[in-house]
Amino acid sequence: MSLAHVGSHIIITQYELLPNRKTTTMSIESSSSSSSSSSSSSSDNTDQSHPPLVDIGINPTFEPLCHHWKEIFRTAVHHANVQTILLTGTSMEVTRQNLTMAQTWRSEEQDANVFLTVGIHPCNAHTFRPE
Image 1: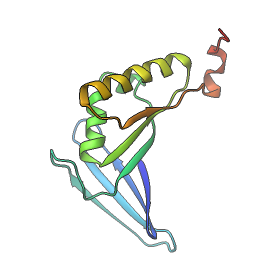
Image 2: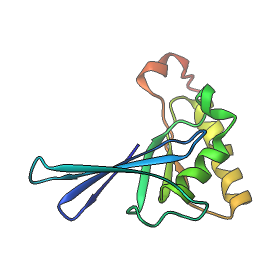
Image 3: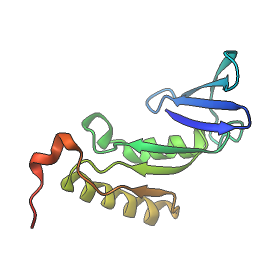
Image 4: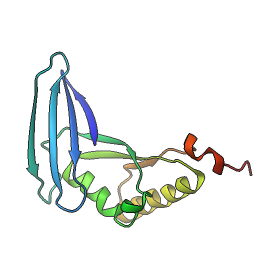
């Protein structure tokens, strides 16, 4: 799910990454309680009907996602207008895996829109070794 603030609206986009690629967008008027939503199937081209989005917390090393991460990134970029993807580092091992994914994406897709955080989530603090 991604959020964008456009004018007086907050745009919430949830895109189904696998397998049917449906995109649902809800626009919420930030100054009132009115809202509307729509759902559509995305085409093969980049969907410009949505505002540009930044996905600030994807965890592609999560087991159900790790085997399909390239397809997930492509779907986000080409079908949900996600222009920047931020991979979340939750441990040193995950950070290393994220770095490899970001480097592979940049090399294979010729797209520098994937970045990562480096850090250890409090739930994984026990895995940290100072060396």
